[in-house]
Length: 159
Image (cartoon, rainbow, N blue to C red; front, side):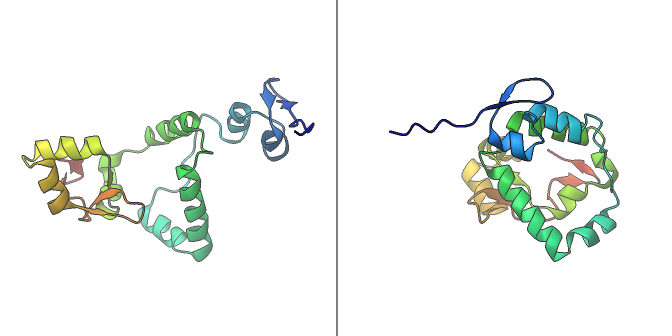
């Protein structure tokens, strides 16, 4: 039995109780205040030209940083509610049908409900769809085999 008590602190902005992580790594602020301070609601997209993004992202340091970020996104450490709020803010500023680049260059990861919905839409059984149109990635997730996405017509999703 230990008499050690975990240190607790209060957010320097709103007074909410925080732990040492926030005290030392988030400038003494709770997650909400920290993100409001450093990632304001008016999210900015700094680069939207796909060729410039490809060049930037091809550097080894950026690839390592992106891998670490990807691992963080899949971890239990991510505040899903806050992350979804940021994603919503950013995606509202992107007009997907201008380039449809995600569907042209990335393999879509499919959830169970996606597979059911798409297979029904194209009149295949779930198993037929999986066999014909998907592969399992390194994380054991189903993703579409084909890039660009076979359902992309022009810059719009056929599904």
